Length: 105
Image 1 (cartoon, rainbow, N blue to C red):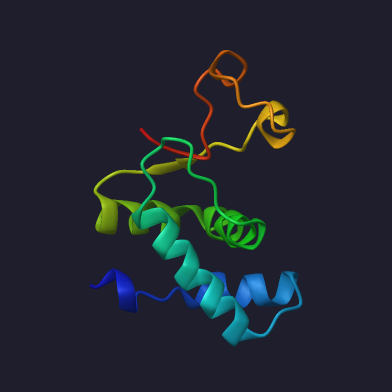
Image 2 (cartoon, rainbow, N blue to C red; image 1 turned 120 degrees about the vertical axis):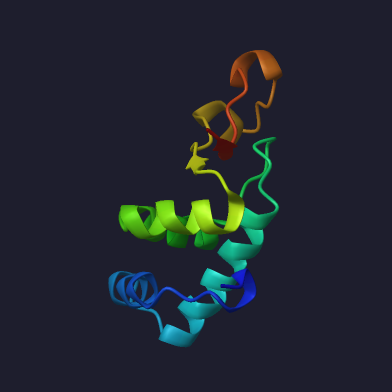
């Protein structure tokens, strides 16, 4: 199995229906999500709003998401939403206390 060719039809169709998007547009977002996750180190990386939304859709398919993480990254990639301070532009390490958008177990 290859990350670049991996496709999850359940997630793609679910996201297209819920967000009223074309399948081709969602496939592009899913590709961007794979790119984001492959570079995700747990050190302050944040996806775009659209990529975050499809990440949420993927996480809702828990077994498929867990297997994807294990197969391609040998670990589970946790989603840690940005804090309200970070979203407000207050990115002091003391305020954030290490909160990132992605982290490993």
